[in-house]
Image (cartoon, rainbow, N blue to C red; front, top):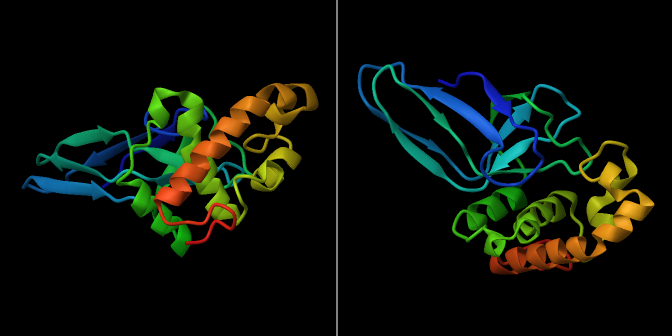
Length: 193
C-alpha cells in the first residue's frame, strides 16, 4: 500500500523528483515492483502526470515502509512542472500504447545523458515528442502548448531573450531525444515506431 506521495518540484527528469512510501501490511516479506510505464497522477490537474521509465523492484519486510525514488518523466508538456511538495497518487500503466512502448524501451537504456543535465533532458523531450505526436526536431511543435501556455512546462523559460539564450541547450536536448527515439525504434521525424 502507498503512503503520501510527493514531488520535489525541481522540474528535472530522473530520480530525486518523487518520493513514494510503500508499506508491506502482510506478515510475510514481499517483492514490490514499480514497472516502466506506471503513471502517478497529480492532485492539481494543472500539473504534469509523472511516468516511471526505469522499473524499480524492492523487497519489503513485514510491517515495514520503504520510500522509493523512481526515475520519472513528465508526460503533459502543456501543464506545469510539479511544484514543491506537490501531491501525487498512484495511477496505472500509461494508456497510450506508444508511450508505454517508449517507457519499456527506455527501461533498458542508459538515461544519464553522459552525465550532462541537458543531455539527460533528451529523455524528457523524447517522451513529450511521443506524447504530443511531434518531432523533437520541431522545437516549437514539440513544446507547443508549453511555450504558449503561461506556466507550462517550458512557458516562462521561453521568453524571447531567455529563449534565445537557451537555443544551444534546446538543440542538445533535441539531439538527445532523437537518439533515444531511434534507439527505441521510433522515427524521430514522426515519433511513431
